[in-house]
Amino acid sequence: MNLRGHISTLSREFGTALLATALLPLCVCAQVTSYGDKQTGENSGNELPSVLKGAKVDQHLNRELPLSASFTDETGKAVTLGTYFGPQSKKPAVVALVYYECKMLCSEELDGLVQSLAMVKLDPGKDFDVIIASIDPNDSVADAAKKKAIYTRRYGRSGTENGWHFLTTTNQDSINALTSAIGFGYVKVPGPDGVLNQYAHASSIELVTPEGKVAQYYMGVEYSPKDMLLGLIESSGNKIGSPVANILTYCYHYDPERNKHSLIVARVVQFGGMITVASLGSFMFLMFRKDAKLGREHALTKDHDDKA
Image (cartoon, rainbow, N blue to C red; front, side, top):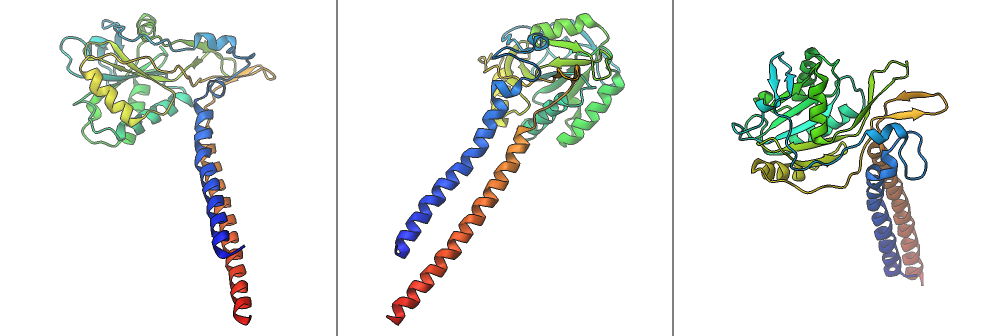
């Protein structure tokens, strides 16, 4: 085979390998967003573990939040949801339901929210509000203040701190009213020590109009900045979005052999990144070896032709 043939073959191999490598992260992402990889615990076929059947998100678009529901913000000030929504409000809000002692999924959810908002050219407090409400009546004002300090520092946009609101309440009726309006289901479960102090729940954030109506849902723990910007702009005009694919990330794991519960977050994205890097490295190594071999063969062919 002449040099042109070698180069043609190498180009085809390069293209094929590069395409396969490029598609690998997409396959990994498909694992992250697929229904089967999001659910955890015992299951049979397509059925969720029984405890997770109550930990779901029903999309209640255009549902009004309970504006009279009472909470306490991170400063200890008594507020209602009507403090942020209603006739006097001009701003939409991003709403996330979490609990502050959640060590895994809730942190991933809030990290994803911060990363998305950091790439949106709108400012909390000026253009919209961020409302993080705890579903755990045992969470304290101190817990809320600590979380606000962490995430506003991580967000890193000075002057926007007043747009972030971390709420708690000991009033279970207020929690029930808010979670019911949003369609956020959760189940209290025992931790590994047997104490009933953890929650099985799914991950989602919601956009709410200035009037206090649910306008859009975003599922999972990673949120597109482009979708976030568009959603905030549309919800600011009291426009209601469309339902999204109900692909859920669950904050729950049950080990039937040990009969214990523990929190997990699937880090398939990070694992996929490592696979991609390793694949690229292997691909480049093989291509360099082929290139070197091709160079040697070309040199030998040239020497032979010169001698002839």
